[in-house]
Image 1 (tube, rainbow over the protein chains, first blue to last red):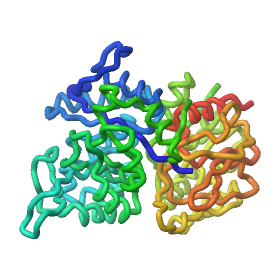
Image 2 (image 1 turned 30 degrees about the horizontal axis):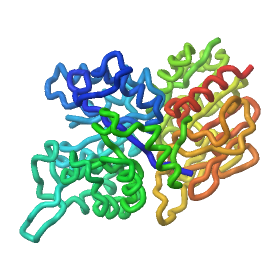
Image 3 (image 1 turned 180 degrees about the horizontal axis):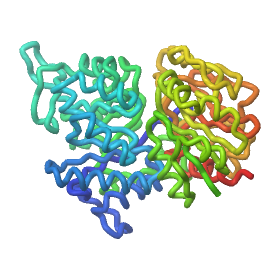
Length: 257
Length: 196
C-alpha cells in the first residue's frame, strides 16, 4: 500500500544547516549532509533542503552540498530556495537532486511551471505554496504569500493550487504561515480542501508540534506527506517513534526497522 | 567487471551513478554500441516520456541493439516501460522484449495519479530480490504501469495490481527507482551486479 511520507526539512545557509540542531551524536550539528544521512537512517521517507542563502557564492556552495547529499543518501530529496530559471533547475538536477521546489518565481511567472515540467517532467517539479488566512475586501480568505510568507499576493490560495497542478506541477508543498511555528497542529481544513481537490500529492507543512498532529493531517487533512523542521532537529519527536505511532494507528507507513 | 549505463535522452541518470558509487561499482555512461555489447552488465535507467525517449532510441539505433543483448540487463522506470510492447503514453510502440502493454492508471476517486512515494512489493521470486525482507518498500513515481503478466516476478498494488519487476531470460526491469529506494533499492542493484 502507498504509504504516508514523513519529511524533515533542513534550512541551509552557506552549505550549513541553520536551525539549531540537538543531535549529540553528530560530529558537526551544522553539517547538512551528515544530518540528512542520519534522518535517512532513522526512516525519513524524503528530505527537503531549502537554501536560504541570498548570494551568488552561496548558490554554488549549495550546489556542492546537493552533490554531496546525492552521493551520500539513498532516499529521494527535494531542493528549493531562490530557484527562478530552467538553468537553475538543470544545475540542481544534474547535481543529483530528485526534485526541485519553486515558489516566488512561479508566482511572478506562472508559465515557468509549464516550462519546467515540459523540460524536466512533472515528477520533479514541486510548487511551494505559502498561505495566510487574512482579511480582504470579501472578508477572510486564504491568500497566497511570497518572500517566506511575508508578502501577500493578489492570488487566492485554493484556485492557485489548482492552477499549478494544471500547469504541470508534480507535487504541492503547502505551508500555512498561520500555523507555522505555533506547534499547535497543521492547517487541517485548508490542507483537506487543497489535497481533496488535487490529483497530485500534497505535502503539508507548518504547525507540527506532536505526533497526533501528523495523524490528524494524514486523516482529516488528507495530506500525502507531512513536513516539519525544528521538532525533528530538536528531537522533540524522533522519526522512528513517530512512524511507529502512526503505523500502530493503522496508517500505511514504511517501517524500516 | 564492466557495467554500462546506457546514455539516451532520459533524465535522472545522475542518481543511478551515485547509487553505483555507493556500492563501489564502476561504470561507463555511453551510447556506443560496441561498448554496450562488450559490457558484463547493462543498466537502462531514466525518467521521461515514452514517445520522446522511444523516438530517440530509434534515431540512434539503440532500439535494435537493446533487444539483441545477451548479458544481464536492467531497465528501470521509463527504461522498463520501453522494454514492453506498447505504451498508452502517446500510443508508443516500444521495443517488445516483454510482450505486455503499459497502461495508464485508471482515474479512481481518492487515488492520485502519478503513483508517487513508497509502496511495498510482494510475491517476489527473482535473483534481484535475494536477501530482501518480505513486503519491502521501494520508491515509485509513475502514471503508467505494466499489468501483472507471465513475466512478472514481483508485483505492487495501486488502483490495480501491476508489475513491479519483470524478468525474461537476461532481461530484468523494475518500475521503481532502485537508486533512491533506501537499503532495499541498494540491495536490488547489488543483486543485479552479482548475477552471473
